[in-house]
Amino acid sequence: MAGVPLNPSKFAEDGGLLDASMEEVVSLFLDKEKRRHKDAKENDGEQEVVVSAKVTPMGLLAVLDLASHNLGVSRSMLTKCLSHQVACWYDSLPNLGVLTEEFYGAYSGAVETGNPDLCDGLRNTSYRYNSSLTGRATTFRTISWVLNKLGNLSLPLGLSPTVLFHIGLCWSVARSSDDVYRKTIDRFLRAEPDKLIDYIGGRSVRVKGFIDEVNYRLKS
Image (cartoon, rainbow, N blue to C red; front, side, top):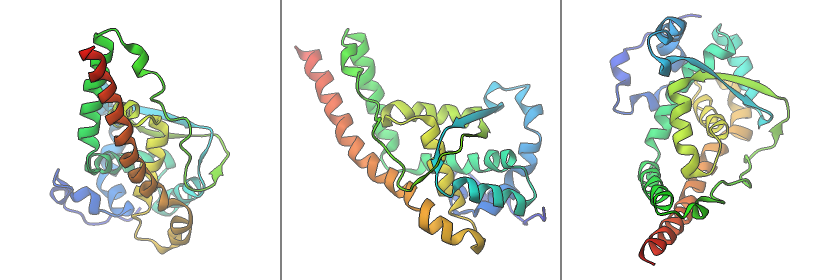
């Protein structure tokens, strides 16, 4: 794959990574991901992990498969590179950090005071991808610390880490600078991150109700 000249300092923790295209992200992290096996020996958080799925948003697999060919990398290498941008995107979502912190505070209060029944029913089983689905079981590769980050968001949002990873990939590939993916992205993938952001707003209302109920039990 032809390298894209990049200045790594451009992508410091100031959100610069959010402005990178899919192709730039791969160029930026490719060498690091090639060394992952070595790095993982020293840090469990750097291990490569598998995300399995029975269904994925329509178009996601097609774009990833074509991008891996066009960029000259395996699909597993591609998704590991994009995982860095996925994690950065979730860190950037407005109010998600506050929602998560408040949720776990109330969750802890419910458990500590012997009211675990309040924790039931918080998982959202009705959430559906915006687009139709590809019903082909598949696996993606990511990094342990990224999956752990999504796992920490899973309970407050009521969604599985797998769903969160898929949506993050939809956002990342939608940043591609190659027009070959554009119609598929516009038709199927671009709406997935927008739907999640709207969902987080509604979820905040439900979490507030959970917090209020826990506080009521604490006072009674």
